[in-house]
Image (cartoon, rainbow, N blue to C red):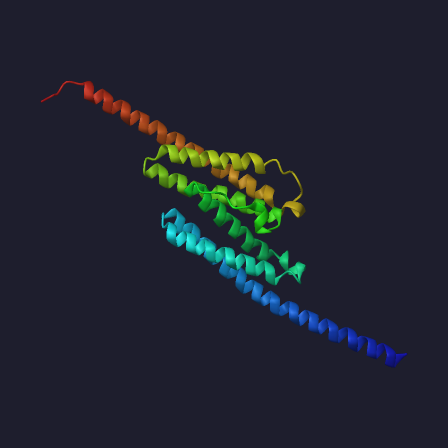
Length: 217
């Protein structure tokens, strides 16, 4: 019996060692790939905010390819697919795709084609909406009020949809917390736009009034 048990344990240990070694190697590569994906997405968003669209599109294409490669590498190990770092990287990819689409007015990405878990996708969309605040403030500085209001409208639409998901964090991956943060970003942006419009109207009123006054010279 002892010999049979030892043989059985040796077989188990050998199989487990082979499997865990393979998983560990894939995990190490996935960590590196996740960091690179996050870097590409960050640079793509930054280029978009600067209106460097050739660079933004190139970086986003590289990010798309990196995201697909990351997902494909983890198909044999679904446990790694749902590890936190993997989800964070894919969330950043969604954020970059949606942010660049919204600020440029171009077509939004296909949800189905991405193959990204939908709770991750929703969190990425939420962060993209928050990212629109930066663009809105840039547009206010350029006195492009219509564009700032368009972006505010997009933020509002995202918030209205996302707040309807009342499932536990275990299902949504912490979506409620991000939606709460988005609400704060949305209200600050609304306040900034409102104040800017009021200042613009006041300035125009004063300019019109000044034009009606007689020349003091």
